[in-house]
Image (cartoon, rainbow, N blue to C red; front, side, top):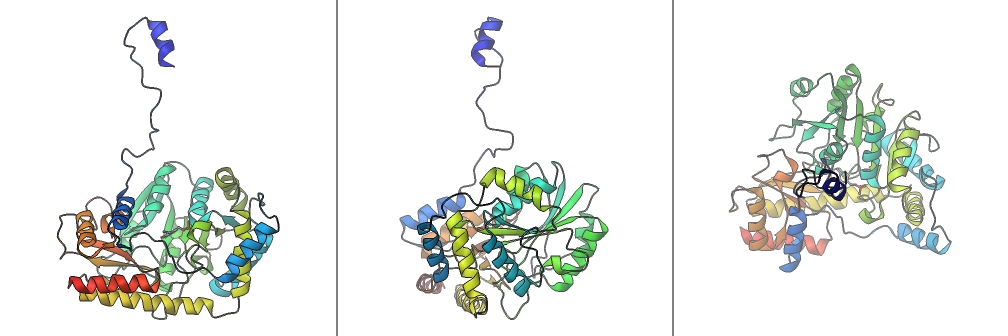
Length: 404
Ligand code: PMP
């Protein structure tokens, strides 16, 4: 009831009504702005921002040229809700070549607003409020927040903090009659863990036994080091039907701002997932879909993807060496482009305080490890992003070496 009407009806000077304007029950009381605050402070001191997972290296020329041509050619209106056919076809070719997954581009693929939009739509289409979803810790904050924003229940299973191995007894113990899905991220942000074929096979067995969906966020699939292989869980026996494969071009092509991602799943799930994606986003930006399709096609039989691995392995080694020198012992990542490092030696009682100490002492912004753990976890860790241009990375390494 509107407060003014209540006043008239009751005749009381101070009606006992709730204020009409208030945040929803789902809205967080405090918006976590640590990363943003860190970036502002970093800019103020002219520091180097290794906090945000924004890869600022150059995009493929074919992507830029394709998008500009599409704008000029008038591709500036909504596209089909599942994306333009040339992009879906190019993604299907890429998935056949790199993921060993045969996907029908016309019934099993959806172009999405990044991997983020894909996960959001898939959860809305396949899960109900109160359903439990298992995921590993350290986790990517958006995964947990996306689940919470839909009244789903994240059930967090810690990885071994020495080497990120999975305790399968713990995983099994975390399952209840309300468990509906497992959310995987390999290569993982922030740990850099690359799930082995053996680990994924055991997860697949559990998923089959308990009849669970597997949401697989593979956004870092091309960032693999020391000869590791990326295994898409959907390729494992019996998994095609229950696996929702999510990836995108944000990281591979350094185009995080373009919002081009995709989702592959069995045809029976696609219409509902597409329905929810359409409700929120309508479609991915039209000309940028053309640019992405052009780049995928242009790079199909080139060394682009193997070069990417080599380039990022070199960046990883550079930053790991500097961190070791600074006695911020790194957990050497197997994939993705982040390093968690032990920041025990830095002053501060919490990871946030330690991050501020590092920014003050050597002008490098990082993310406090606590952002990737439940309350109390990650307090000795900082996350460094090495998806950066070489000159910035070199400057950061020099600054870290000064710290030693
Ligand atoms: N998944 C993971 C694990 C990520 O780290 C990120 C970027 N930080 C995303 C998804 C976001 O991907 P997109 O830009 O495609 O939404």
